[in-house]
Image (cartoon, rainbow, N blue to C red; front, side, top):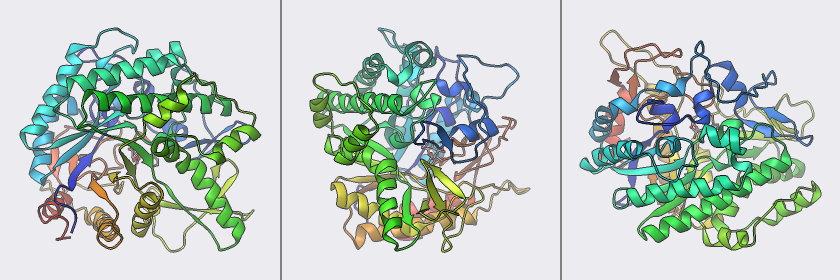
Length: 485
Ligand code: P53
């Protein structure tokens, strides 16, 4: 059995869910300058190659954008309205409660609290909004699980201060964290610092216009320091706080037993994932990265106490997303690449989603075991799910048996990791429990939810909420503590 206080729930992020982008005194965030469709598709999933060129997983016809704070009236920006949780939070939280949620993962929009980022005092109206949201959750016994930074930052800090390249940003981020830790003390106990810290690359997440390897590692150093300081501060303010990291756990397999493939997979998984969890869980840079920096002649500018800060700011738990696995190969003729010269192969044993993400439930059990073996820290599956198109029937029902099948298979493997392997697992929050905007593509039709939201890719629709078949299924799963699948 899963433990008694296992947290069942669902997950969202402000810029994909909340909307109300210019209400309540909120300032612009980098995510507010992201249009939908192909532009964003090409800006995501990037990787730096040996020549400091950014390689995009979804294609090479990237249109360079060197934009500054410009919102073009003729373009559609999905984050502006998103699915309007800002005005629907009561209805949405009631739906979560009806499913039996014990927790709700969401992010705070930094610019709701500090509209430019560098103010001395926070925006009271922004703070009030989250008071209302948390109170609404607690009314139903739902624990908020809060990501402090989910794929955006104040536009002002990006454009005027060079984003995370600047040490100043650490100070501003800390001011924001301290403000919300104090304000929501007693209401929020579970936190995460940076969403998918290992996928931060673009302007939207790092706030850096022109990126190269040197800059990337410097910006990431600042993020590691900011996260560690936030963990320390959060513990000082409330010793009850549980503050985790958040890793995009993309599992990689070697294509064959050729030791060269196996060695490649080791190196890829270190650079893609374990570098980040090693720093945040162990409190220091791993040797393989120090050697890499040395070889590449990358010098990170550190301040005197940075090494101590990293040591003292280790996370309490590992939150991670798990959607799929990938295969890496040394075969020259393999066609797709992961960037960095790494070639990818197809996995003949797995089916793919409509968006070509391989579906691999066993990979979830493997991932849980790898992370548990490596760190011995509690784990929390804070994202998982199937992005798929849904069809609304004439009577308003939505038969998403494909989503139920995906979640069932993953929950089965998750339970094996707990019950048969003894992994310490805190909870499970499937992604986009109420339909929201896709991070990778800006689309609405790539839906993850158990609640349907009537809106299309251009933002048209009534925003009405409908319960899908998966809603009733998940309700049953939660009430049976994962036994009735
Ligand atoms: P979308 C890539 C790979 C794994 C997770 O993704 C990823 C991404 C970014 O696209 O992001 C996480 O919306 C992220 C969420 C995101 C979700 O996965 O592209 O934390 O913000 O929406 C699903 O289908």
